[in-house]
Length: 220
Image (cartoon, rainbow, N blue to C red; front, top):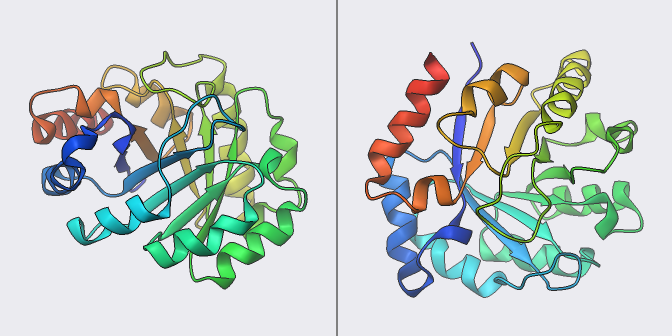
């Protein structure tokens, strides 16, 4: 049976008390802490930088799952590694030389992920899949929280799962965007094993109960 992981996105947290919010989802049963980094260039929003990642790092024992929605991306990767990132995920469109960027992420001691936007073809994984630790499928267009899941993402998840299984490697398949308790089982059945949830967790009154509901849905 897959080892499912929940990665709450701090994009939907209360930024006025971010350390407390990170501790709260950690204690509620999160497996990763998802850190969405947006630059108001690659995506139409501006969020946080390495200083904020460094500030929240002491508030959790869980890996920081850093998703860089920025372009160009290479120059800031070492800064997020210094800030405490454990996983750094980039978009192929955010770099000129994706293989070099993956090597850079590994060289600074982090796991490397590649993220595909809804319309990004999965063929971009063809020559790098065996070099990475995680594939992140965006099931919404990146830039804002609270969007609805794009249904055709399920076909992409299924196709990527087949490619991952063919490698025989322990590559995680993460999905971000519109993942909720009422659809997480469907997303898991398509092949995902890591689930990013922002508003679906942080907009609820009891984080522990919500994460437990995600796990119950995944076990069903």
